[in-house]
Image (cartoon, rainbow, N blue to C red; front, side, top):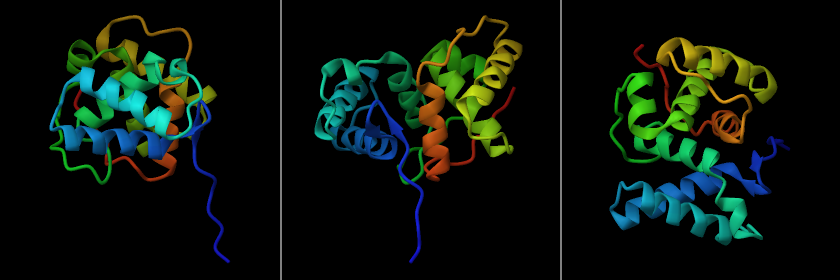
Length: 161
């Protein structure tokens, strides 16, 4: 019998179902706005058993997932890829989206899918590319990317400097 790895979990919710479900809601709503994403994200959180609204309101993973979706990096989602620099991503979508893209790129290049070792590398790369200070601690955005990567839910994330 074929064994599969358990699904990645963030705040007691399956990452892939949460992110892909939100992406499908965006397609149905025919919207690209962050506001619609946030509403759809909270709806999916509730539909998947999130017990408290605050579970879905955590901004870092929500913003990271929005960035991956907006930039066309989610597998199985019909969106054109936007080839923005990390600096542009930070300016237009925020730091969490930039962290997510850097993490996806590092994972694609063979980095270990372990948040405690990946986050320092993401921070260093972010600071090199943006000349801005990265957050001290990972707040769920890197664990979200690792979950999506391990479940093959990301397309190639090679970015320009």
